[in-house]
Image 1 (cartoon, rainbow, N blue to C red):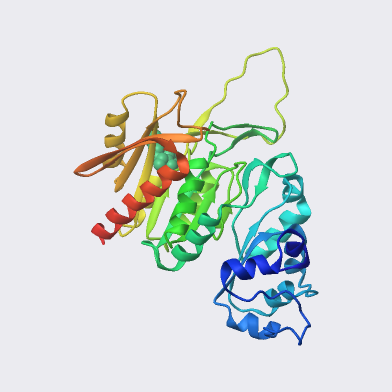
Image 2: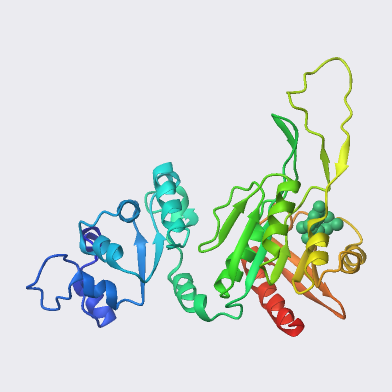
Length: 359
Ligand code: C5P
């Protein structure tokens, strides 16, 4: 326990509830249960810091060791997981975000805080993830159904420039793809997420490759697909892209025409280029859902297509919930309307099952 933690809860409470001794002092050889900080650092299989304050995060990022916790973290070689919790403005502050990015790059697992109402009366991201989620992360990471499997996911919209200040995009929020990445990760997979521009924080432990245009997404996905076992194409890739003007288009009295060139189909190219890859596509339709989904399954030669209605009030693009029907050769399954994270969990389970059947 840090000094700040002991302002909230006494060590005696933790000791009584856990049945274990509580360590709090860096240099106190008289402490009854004294175990040196180096011994503690060596002894741990994994360190979970929950809640992790902005101050502790800054210390870890900069190698400061001025109390027991920061010293143990500096001295350990085991996996370190942080569950940050703080005021939303503090969490969004660039100083904290830069520290988080640095720690993630060094291999720490960061369980991003959730969005909601906070003790300080504000609303925003900063609430510590639920303890159950932390336990799930710890227990599933190593032994989940997809451990040892590399999963590549594309998510979000693409942005096709018209000129240096304008672009064409779509309503995709990336929420479905990010939820799939989170659930694949907690199923033990090694996850790479190629993402178009979205306003989402990447899930803990996932390798994020940010792209903007359909062409950039094509290049990144093709590049990564050689080492992947499963590809899930949940991105809403632009089908057409304008030839970008070098300078800003000036207005004049006349109407304008944009010439749109067909982009390359990432999903079809990936499925074509790597036979061993298990490929999953998405079909977002406003009509003829089943026929279009089955057509995609055959035409793009993919293993599965998850089809959903879009442009409706209750789910789909930029919504919290979604419902899909998944089609594969010889079968289909309906997944009723539910939160995207829950849907993602069910989809990952189904994908894992079919992946193993294929291999
Ligand atoms: O044909 P349609 O665009 O409806 O197919 C959607 C599926 O194809 C999605 O999985 C999407 O990620 C993928 N796609 C792609 N490259 C494109 C267009 C769509 O990978 N250029």
